[in-house]
View 1 (tube, helix red, strand yellow):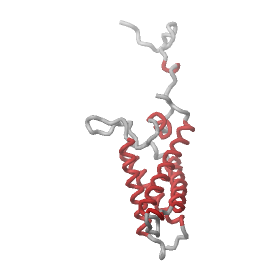
View 2 (view 1 turned 90 degrees about the horizontal axis):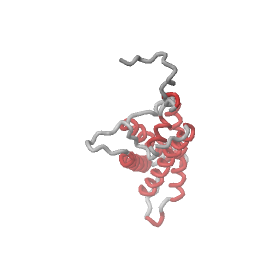
View 3 (view 1 turned 60 degrees about the vertical axis):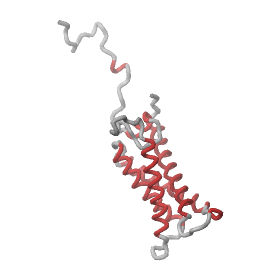
View 4 (view 1 turned 180 degrees about the vertical axis):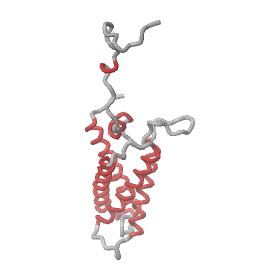
Length: 185
């Protein structure tokens, strides 16, 4: 398993989370027909979908930064997935609000919640499909994650523990150095 530098793993984690949120909101917007417009396939709201996707990307990156700053990233599979679902829902909803002039009385809440629900549903499916390795007994393995990053990269990004010791640090003492060793019987 190849381990990437910490800074690169964190950058890839931000990109993975933001990219998936953007993609899920983009597809959800097209499926829902947009926020405030219900149109035929010929008149899909491409511009609105792109605007919402970019807004969701930015929102996801900001929410991920908050999660990293609060050191709430090294979570088990289900808590991690629930946090991702909440962030996707909030990203999609805030993206819908940012896409147009937000006015609480004229805002199309029904379509905004529809887009957020579809994006969250897609996020749930992605999280379940990304859970590797699959366990034959149905239990979630301790190293499973809802991330599509390689396991080593994901663990490097979210782990807040000290770095593992180097191979040299785990070598036994030299043969002449017997201090602290247990004598043979």
